[in-house]
Length: 142
Image 1 (cartoon, rainbow, N blue to C red):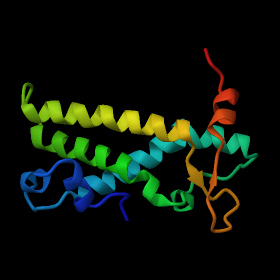
Image 2 (image 1 turned 45 degrees about the horizontal axis):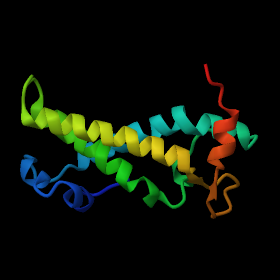
Image 3 (image 1 turned 180 degrees about the horizontal axis):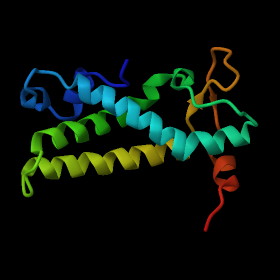
């Protein structure tokens, strides 16, 4: 199940459902979920797992609560929706919207990582926040 629904999209972009051929952006929300999982694995999970002394693979089902990713998903889904709308148009107001939500997605991803993502490291049904300060101290800066 995607991290966001059409009703979440409408809270940010009122008319977005009218721009869809079938009245929904579910396919883009599903794609956004895959891309978010990929980004979280690459930019957060590997370093956090190292701190937790965990050799487990990233499991999106252990993000608890999953609602912490709704806003991130909204931005990625809107980016993908506008990307579909514009297709090959070089100069288009929808391209500007796509770029806007692409930037907002990156800002939100950075914010979530800096604040710490709640993840059920020990699979006990309770999410644990990875201390972002500790995580940032352990990252290699070049």
